[in-house]
Amino acid sequence: MPNKRRYIIVDDESSNQKLLKNLLEKYGKNFEHQSSFDNLPEAEVYLKNYPTDIVFLDIEMPEKNGLELFTTFKDPEFITVVVSAYDKYALPAIKEGVFDYLLKPLVIAEMLKTLHKIEHYFMEKQGERVIKITENGQLWFRKENEILYLAANGAYTEIFFSDGQKSLQSKNLNHFQQLLDETFFIRLHNSYIINAKHLDFVNTAAKVAILSNGVKVPYSHRKKKDLVQFLNKNKN
Image (cartoon, rainbow, N blue to C red; front, side, top):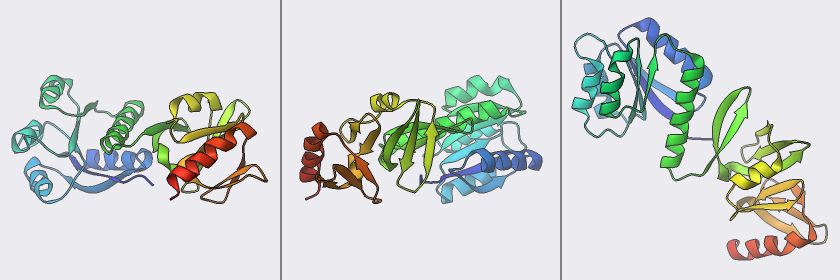
């Protein structure tokens, strides 16, 4: 499963903290709440001592304005998402390099866009190729190397992952073939694409490719050479 994105919430109103935390628990399945603070100084102490990926930051708070975070942290390793009731801070926040800006009251569609941007950012930062997956009207990113194989299902495509999950997508197999890294994703015939990184064995008698989870995927005669060459190159 993808690494959890560790986050804190900095907002002087506890009701806002709870609402945002609840929404992140519901829609941010790869996000992990670390702590919440009602003032910036305490949050800054925490950030100096504990690794954090994301700060969800209010602006107008007692003691210190939220944007003063960037005075304390000139080149932070975490990204910051401003969550404010006021749009007048958008330009100053952008100049400080905030990752995104959400207005209160929160709109679910806008929040989901931000979560998708965050997920994509961290995956690309880790040097991972990613693929977009739509499930129940929500967009998620998965690493390409987590894909075992893809199977045509009429005009749809079913994607099978190494963690046992699967997902039915409303795009055909040709769509995904154009997106995936052709170095490792091999189209066996009209109905299947496999991730050759998960290829364990080629049974030439039965004309099937056997994947790391034991699944047997049939291949066309012209793909035999590609499969055997990949195994010889990478299974030493």
